[in-house]
Amino acid sequence: MESPPGGDRLLEVVRKTWGYDSLRPLQREAMEAAAAGRDALVVLPTGGGKSLCYQAPALLSDRLTVVVSPLISLMKDQVDRLLSKGVPSAFLNSSLDAPDRGRVQAGLARGEYRLLFVAPERFAAPGFGALLARARVGAFAIDEAHCISHWGHDFRQDYRELGRLKREFPEAAVHAFTATATPRVRDDIVEQLGLRSPEVLVGDFFRPNLRYRCVPRIHKLEDAVEEVRKRPGEPGIVYCIRRADVDELASRLRAERIRAVPYHAGMDDEARTRAQDRFAAGEADVVAATVAFGMGIDRADIRYVLHAAMPKSLEHYQQETGRAGRDGKPADCVLLYSGQDWKLWESIVRQNETTDQDVKLRMLSEMYSFATTVRCRHRRLVEYFGQRWAAGKCGACDVCGGELGSLPDSGELARKVLRGISRTGQRYGASYVSEVLSGQKTDRVRERGHDALDVFGSLPGKPKGVLMGWIDQMVDQGVLELEGEYRVVRLLPKAAEVIQGREEPSLYGSAPARAKGKKARKAPAAAPKREEEPLDAGAEALYGRLRQLRKEISDELGMPAFYVFADKTLREMARLRPATPSALLSVNGVGPAKLESFGRRFLKAIRGFDGESSA
Image: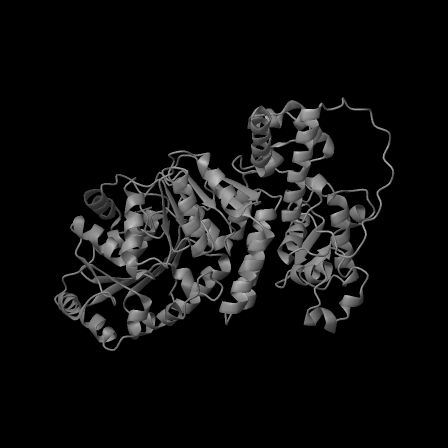
């Protein structure tokens, strides 16, 4: 079979201009589609080299390629890089004064440029369409094309208007590029842009060098600082939800003598550029940032991406974690999450999203499900983006590595959830069932009379996200299924075994808070136990201190104290006084998951107590 036209010339251009001797997967196919003047949709995960796919073919054409990019702040950097390689390029946006705009427009009229970068809003400017018509446009390259779709994670109305390009420039090819698009979003992009028989290229979302781990968060900033402290001198990004958290975290890290800089949209352009440049140059090891950071970062050796709180969608998460390990070497992707993250994002969506609220909330639920799932993290991502998983265990996540610890009362929790699904008739989605179980008297719950059911409020005080996470975990374990477009929760045959106590699924995440005003049911008498060796006076005092710490943690998390550590485990800690994580791990009742979640605070308490004793 003959190679498509331009194949050898493309590699020659890439080698001569960018210095690459080979291309990444699907880059050649995307470039050849562009060189042949075909419409295309290209989905390559972050770091897959999308920009080269439209930049290189532009050099083989005698016509202009217009690049539509959402971030004005990055256009100058992109153009400066191209100009440094001898590629005639320009940008046209609101940052230019009138004389500079005039120079660019004159250059377009003379055919001086091969690439022009603009924001989608530019197409609504008077006279811009006529300017492009005179400039002989051969192709449009639309970056971050998922913004076109209502089903995408960053929908923008100005992107939606780009469907006009095929009508106004019917001879120009349109190439859409994105790192994050589910099958539904891909179909919507093709439809909205009016692409004609497009070449659809979707890269592999499985990146085995990334090691995924999801950890229930106890203290928002302290846990993040501890994760960074484990990786001294390694370049990394820490994502936060709020700007105030970014500033505080960066300050805390600097107090630990870690070279950290903040980055968020509340900073002025100069400060943001300075932070980005310091990180790119290796003068800073860590960037604490909101989602505003990352696009256009050309650093391949990022060794970890840490989320100090849960992002609002799997699309955001995949895009942000994809910035780690672009050199192909191992990198960590750690997500610190809490049910409070789900509630915060739900509040933000309801207050700020005037349209598509249901879509955004569904994406949020998918994200929480990922954090609380008992299925391979890589598999969840790959399947979410519409690809088949056939790799078995990935060997690069906490689930496949056996690092998770299930809740001690998983069976009883599961039975309450299953009864709630059964008593509401197996007719509703996880969100509604969770409202009933947590005792929320919403309008729809009252209208259906489900606030009168015996299961109403049977799991009080739990965020919906936690309960929905448990439902997803039981889907993963074959107890439940989600049916149809509205993901109605239905019981599978295995559910009967769970309800009757013959099967016990493993659930993990936050345990339900005890209902206020209700007395705890008295536990049955325990079988006689073998007497333990008594503690000396010092160990007894330390045991009291550890019990106090356990209560603080259980109150913070809204979980029973025994879920943190059993009395027997605390007594052994007091007796042995472990001073290191490995020593603590040797204590009966301390596993890897609990060491990760609680170990640092207990070790600190033990060391502090020893210091007091010797004073």
